[in-house]
Length: 242
Image (cartoon, rainbow, N blue to C red; front, side, top):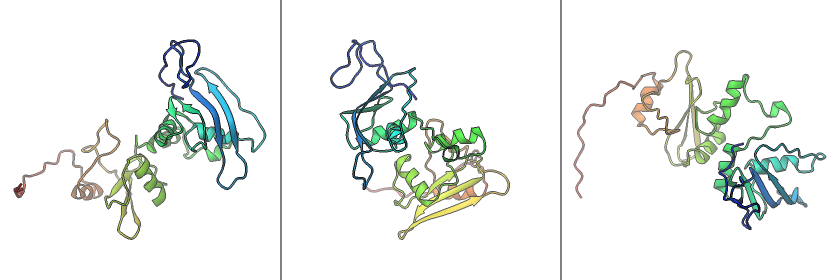
């Protein structure tokens, strides 16, 4: 987990949960945390207090159904707490949508069963899977309509129903998926190259996880044209009258 910024310092914590001067804030700090699954008659967690600092190793033990996995999902920002007076994970407020989204980047959840954790055949691809889903790298090609629509909303912060074409490439750049809305439903176009790769160097920006291109440029990319050295010729453009 990524440590949060050190808070102000005094041996005691302040009433709002911030660290005292000279003392680093806990990586995990929750007070009166509660959660109830939809349709359940009782809370899975109720009144939980927990503080874990950097360098600590803490084991949470209990019988099946005692709430261990629920706690891990809450701390990882995967579930929304039903209530808490304070809920911070790596400095992110788990009581807000933005805080939970940010926590997912800094808090890792390791599942008990390997088949529920591993998504690739080698370590490199498995590690890259998480980065790809943060739009730091090409998209995972196993995602279907709903998965890519969620990726568009949560990571790109765009509306998949807007009519734009949202194009995702895999890590090897030999597969592409295009998600778009055609006024009656979501559509997915999928192309796999039998040889060669898509060339995207003309549009890649190390400071941005995505790029905006014209439909004509997309057509050329899908046809295998490298636009890195292409030049756009001047064309007539009508003058706008104020």
